[in-house]
Structures are given as C-alpha cells and as structure tokens.
Length: 123
Image 1 (cartoon, one colour):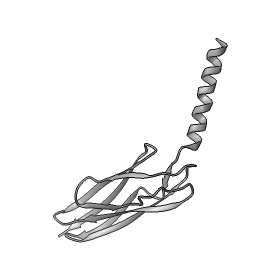
Image 2 (cartoon, helix red, strand yellow):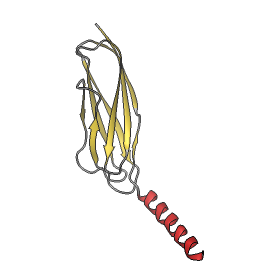
Image 3 (cartoon, rainbow, N blue to C red):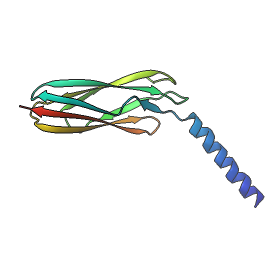
Image 4 (cartoon, helix red, strand yellow):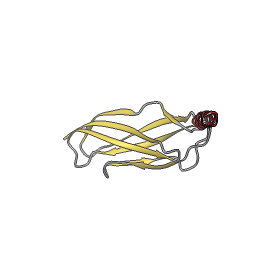
C-alpha cells in the first residue's frame, strides 16, 4: 500500500514538472473584425503572440478553411518570452456578405489554437 502511494505521488510530481515546462503561445487577440470590404479586395491582419512557456515552440502548421485565406508564420523556434506574429490575409474575391473564417495554429507541443477573422463583403 505504501509503495502504491509513493508511486502515485511520484507520478503526480512528475506531471507538475512537465506542466511547468510546457511551452505555450499566448496571443494578444484571437479574433479580428476586418470590417466592410469591397468584393475583390484583400485585407491582412497580424496576430501577435508571445511564448509564455519555458521551452521553445515551433509552429508546425497553420490550417485555413479555404483558398481565400493565406498565412505567413515564423518557421524557426519561438523561444521563451519571445514575441512574433502570424499574418493572415483574406481575399474577398467571389465572396459576398458576412464572412467568418477560422485559422488553426498547430504547434510541436500539441497545441491547436483557433484564430478567427470576420468581414462583411459588399459588391
């Protein structure tokens, strides 16, 4: 019984140490309204973030919903306390009305962070 308690305590403490060392990207904002835009126009927005963890983070992929959204992101590791950004560009060609797009950021830590952009496309 005592060995079981010690084993569980050790597992719990290892879990705490791993959680404290986990990397994490903290975004200044995760939503942005691009406002009204004419059909065919493009608008871009930077989503700034900071690595608030204790180890480097690598953005492995940034997944978009459709070809109307393009992304640029840092390919090198983001070190603790380092700030960087992801550039999202929305192309309203062929779109009309309220547009809602979700962009998913995938990191080497297993995080999947959702970013959202909105726009009202008018002819």
